[in-house]
Amino acid sequence: MTHFYEERGEPFKRVEAIRNASLSAMLFMLTAKEQGWDTCPMIGFEADKLIEALQLEERFVPVMLITIGKEDTTSQRPRGYRKPIGEFVKYV
Image 1 (cartoon, rainbow, N blue to C red):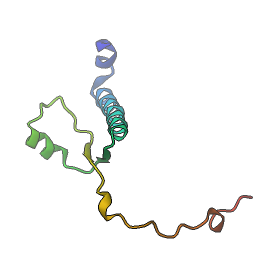
Image 2: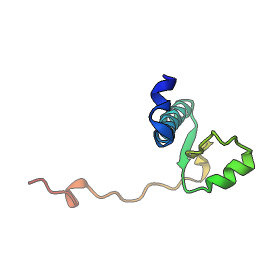
Image 3: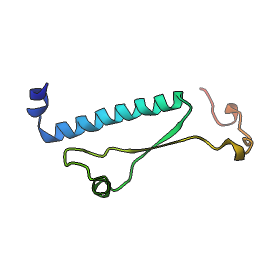
């Protein structure tokens, strides 16, 4: 397996790392939901600052951040009006 990755070069290894991390993140989020937690993936962070703050080794690639918590249901408002689908969808 090592040869498979080594011969394809750095760009391939980076893309594969991001793909694997994304699948792992999805599994984490699904498992958290099953346990009653809510999650949210976040992109748009400054990876270099995250690397510095967490003192990550150069071999690690930050892919996304995931928030996790429980919804505060004490302040939920009733759901507003929802249009029937027939008002905005037409089948031809």
